[in-house]
Image (cartoon, rainbow, N blue to C red):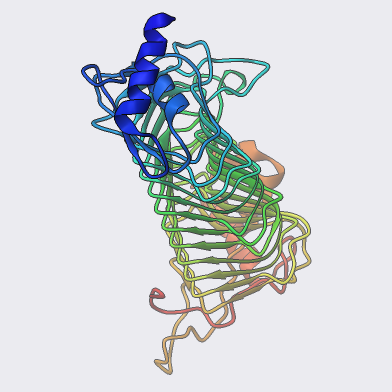
Length: 411
């Protein structure tokens, strides 16, 4: 205790700690403990930590500080506890390695937890063996950028999420790599936020999971090999542009699930090698423009209560089924799309087929009713059934067709 007091007094004299000062933490420095440095620091100070320092006790911060790690000093949860809890504004942490977050069935332990914070940055950190990686509660106007987050998830009930936001707004999540957790990125009650340039892959459940979150933008992300792709629920005014949904494959998997989504834009995305590219239910007034559907089981599966949606200039290439539709009533528009299976002609050479294309096969309707019938997929009988339904629709919607199918892929 006496030794601690001497160091603290020496540090106060040595640094003349005040606004804007820098405190160095290393083994050979006057201060060699991060907790002591935080205790001594004043608002707006910067703490620079050397990589010869390891912190293995829970840290709590309620001052406006900048924490800089030099070559990734370790902050270790010892598989027992949360690591860093912050409740302040104008906070920055950069260049640390967080590892071994404690697992708990009663508390959501995180490597970094921010509570009611704004104007913060969490940047260029590494996370390994995390329960929750970054957890934000009631935060705003923050940036989470260039972090690498890896969990060790094996079953859902014993795992947490990589980046978890609850009741937040105006957050940007940019260029992070998240893997091996339950949900890569999770939003609940998060508005006016951006998810851009991220890679979320090999997660147990979703690459991205958000609900009750409005006016958010998701752009140029890659969601690959996740348990069930991306789930978007109970939200409105969503923009999803130039994302890639890849190899989300399994008996109940999809690239993108839309449930109770309204007034959204889904444009220039790629859905490739998913069980289902887009699975939509109860989702209305959505513009699907310029998307690529490549080698999916079902490119688009439209279930009940989907109205006033427009599919325009999308490319459907080598999918087992391009469109599956529940029911015989259609209030959605399919026009000017490219269909790889279109067998029509273009006599006037204007680039648009002269006969409409019906994308819903009778067999897709049968498989929806009896999934085990998929074993008949390549049989001659099924080809005959599909052709007869195309000529004279009985089971599929009579008004679901593309009246102006493109002869060449849309750009």
